[in-house]
Picture: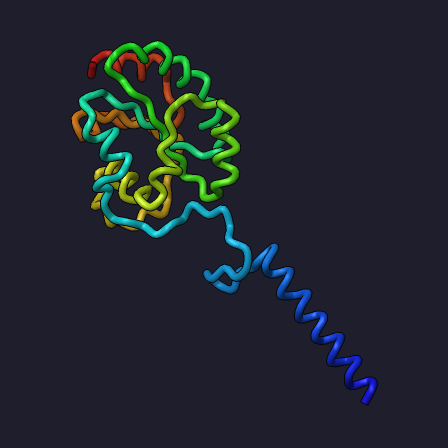
Length: 185
């Protein structure tokens, strides 16, 4: 009987330890995450952006808007940031605004990068998490409810009066971007 109680006690302690471990670490079974919530930016998708920060500050603005799509893990994205920051500084006094939207899925990593002040654009990602798919589809001129699964980055869009007027794929050529901004002011 003592051996049985000892075995039950050990099993009980192992189960308690497992439950505690799950609370601090978590694990995935298929697409279901059990345990501690991840810093996940893959929120519930809303296939519109009505009343979003994006609609209110970008689409409803009469300013020319330069939107850069990027990620913290994208080397070309990070490499072009100093030049994009210079362009932003050149056009700040004109009717141009600059914004960025990250396709990162880890909010903690993204926030740490934003806090490092390497990129001086207003980041739309964290305030528009649930609208991100619809925003990317709008920029790509796809139906807002399209399941956007792949994204080649970096991408830079020029938006004016609620319409995408130009798209630059890959790293931004600073001379070309300056020319496009000046042509569309």
